[in-house]
Length: 98
View 1: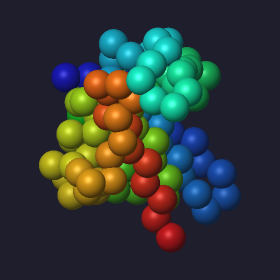
View 2 (view 1 turned 135 degrees about the horizontal axis):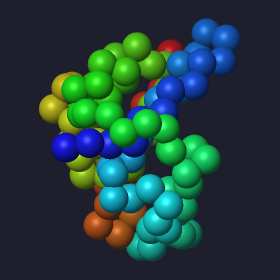
View 3 (view 1 turned 30 degrees about the horizontal axis):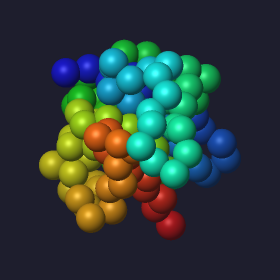
View 4 (view 1 turned 120 degrees about the horizontal axis):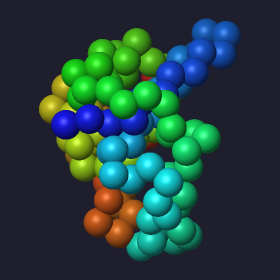
């Protein structure tokens, strides 16, 4: 499975933004407000899930959208399943390491 993966470094912070391949550019309904999986934020390069997990291990901030991305983070112990919110049927998770 592949995901769109984008890494941005700003000073000491490393932001990882990832979304499942089929979600890029879509607007998700079902939350309090529509959620745009924008190409400008999530549109990095296509990557394998293993690369996502390795990037998350180095990140200070992570923003994940989609079943594949969020489940990989849960399986790697980087996200707790109770910390996941749903935008309709689509899982979304954020991580901030202090």
